[in-house]
Length: 73
Image: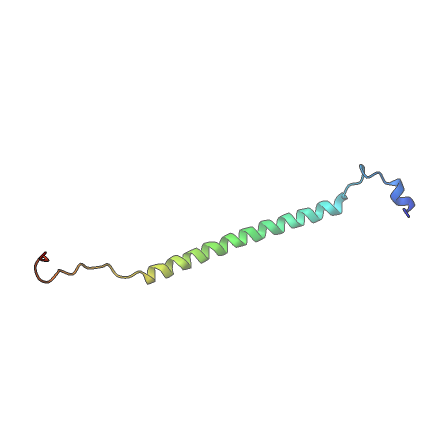
């Protein structure tokens, strides 16, 4: 049950045309913009994480002198 149009088209000669090209270009631009935006957000997130780590670092450990003499065996 094929139509006359389907019979007359050669599958090796059919192309997506201008509309297909425009759609692929739009998708490419969208992906590029999303990746660029994601990079900015990841940079911001990394900066916030580094600031949080710096705030949570314990102060430098100061050695406490041992009381008494050396241990006797």
